[in-house]
Image 1 (spheres, rainbow, N blue to C red):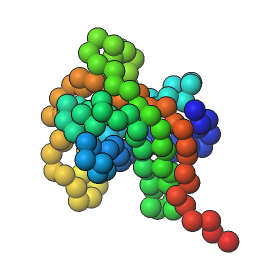
Image 2 (cartoon, one colour):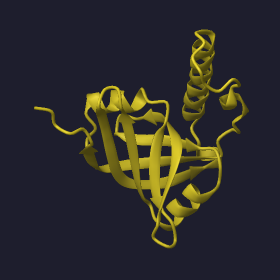
Image 3 (spheres, rainbow, N blue to C red):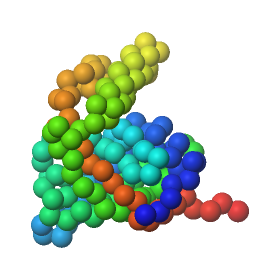
Length: 152
């Protein structure tokens, strides 16, 4: 397992969402947006998936996964490659569920503030309509790719 630096941990935790990639039964990549809920002391990354759809099916057949995260303004980004496992139902730790609820609350508050400043965006709060998570993705990072082009 690859060690995440404090800089990368902080960068990941401050993103609204990340793009994860899995491989389907025909060998094609499948991309979806997920939120990182927690990165524990052992550098395992926890993501909650709200729908039992393609991501879950793909990971059950092939545990290889990547997380891509980019901040265009900071000209910074990473691709984390590794293996994932699915954690379902009663095995979802209460602290993970609470962390997810906290992230949703923060996203709604941020949207409200932006709407008050009259920044264009979604006029409703779709986060409030999201279902409760039924399973969690636990990822072990094997490789970290720095996506930023080195500036001279």
